[in-house]
Length: 317
Ligand SMILES: Cc1cc2nc3c(=O)[nH]c(=O)nc-3n(C[C@H](O)[C@H](O)[C@H](O)COP(=O)(O)OP(=O)(O)OC[C@H]3O[C@@H](n4cnc5c(N)ncnc54)[C@H](O)[C@@H]3O)c2cc1C
Image (cartoon, rainbow, N blue to C red; front, side, top):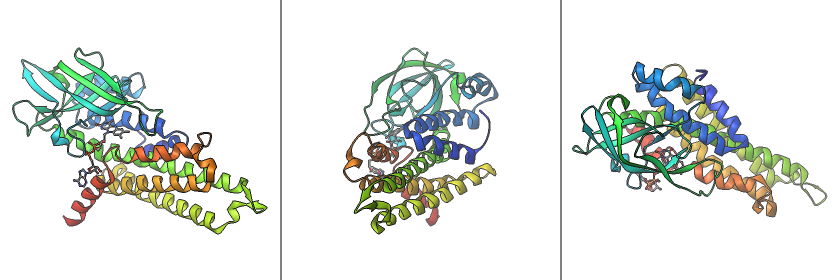
């Protein structure tokens, strides 16, 4: 709500994620739900939705993924048909962050009569025929809510169409490319920083052979690798964010940063668990949670394979 820009958002998410990746994830998808309204909303839509969202009175999310369409969003089956001025939506979304707590959700659906045309709609939790169903129990990031949304003959007023009819794929993907991936970079950097901090603390406290294990070169190598990856990830992420703040587009740069930082977070979490020896496998030590959380960073806002597809397409173009 403060309009601070991409770098400030990245650093804020990183700081929150150092303590709780799950909380950062919830906030990151909150912004991802708002972004399409900021970018593609009409003045009326902005006036209607943004003040309450900016004040935190209502929570947002975005729902693209379905059982038949994740990496390939054209595979989605949620459909819409026009009835007078309204649209009737039917379908099911899965793996949606904030599914059970969001009030305002931007949803991608397919034209019932033209499977190549997609549109994005603003749905509200109060709408008849729209409700959260199954809540997922994840490997990690258990502190944030992820689940399914069922949409059954949900009547959506024409004024809730976001962007032009038939151009909804652009609305959804541009938000995921900039805000979604940028946010995941913040989450991943925070987790990397948390792994490094926990490892330094443990290495200085754990005494073996009469000395802290931070004296062992193998431990030092791991700490050095974590630090290099953290700083390299920051440079990739902050640079992508700076391009956005200057009015440019940096979806490709964010794809590189997302790939690098989420992979580095997994590597850092494994090294942190290793440094902790047997303690790393015990739930009292946060590093065991970091390892579980690190695996959940991967698919969110696009898998590492998809990041490479985007980057390769960019370098080949
Ligand atoms: C914690 C969490 C939160 C999420 N939150 C949201 C949310 O709020 N809103 C939302 O809409 N979605 C959300 N998602 C869904 C997420 O975007 C998808 O999981 C992701 O896009 C991958 O889709 P999929 O799970 O269907 O995997 P699939 O697309 O089925 O992929 C399966 C495998 O195939 C690989 N693959 C697919 N295509 C290619 C290719 N072209 N080249 C090489 N390999 C390929 C993938 O990398 C993967 O290894 C969330 C997911 C998670 C885990």
